[in-house]
Length: 110
Length: 115
Image (tube, rainbow over all chains, first blue to last red; front, side, top):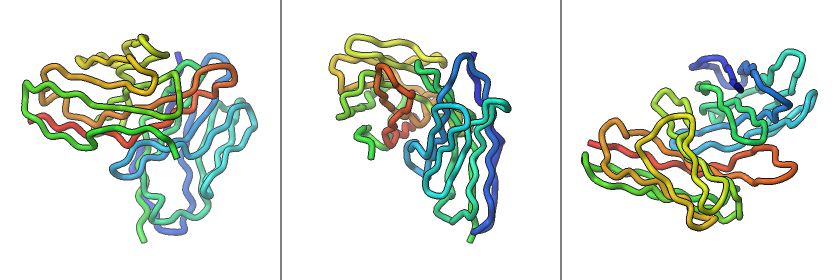
């Protein structure tokens, strides 16, 4: 079956630091890959996505590249802000339903 | 911005009460989902629907039930709430059809506390 593994948090950073959240997956077929973000007290919002190998998704300064050879979709941001404090979920879809990773809490301190 | 709405946002209720969490979307999506999110943040799919009169159990067994009488509406009901039902419940929807990437649109969630 499909599965997503992402690094456990919490990840604590200072403002303007570089952020990486690792995500690897196992899937049958050719999945689409997603990063969702959940701000405190809110639902999930799509942050970025990639639908085929070597695609790079980007949004709000975040980037992730679909690496089929390493089955990975790591999230990166070059300079985080306090407002980036949230829980980040990696997910994959083979069209039927979404499979989520366990979430990574990120705390950015001023 | 996604057009999917959940009510109530917060509910505190006593054991044994019946509750219904409402979820509505105005995007005309065929697929709708309910996720339960535990305090450790992990998301568990408890129900989904592919369209009107279609409902299926998700990966996590749940004592709740759902109905899908209208495309835009997907309510979740607990006949007799218990403290173990205390959780955050997230509703989502997505398109169905060729070219569907599987992207989900989420509501803001309903946080249920059963005393």
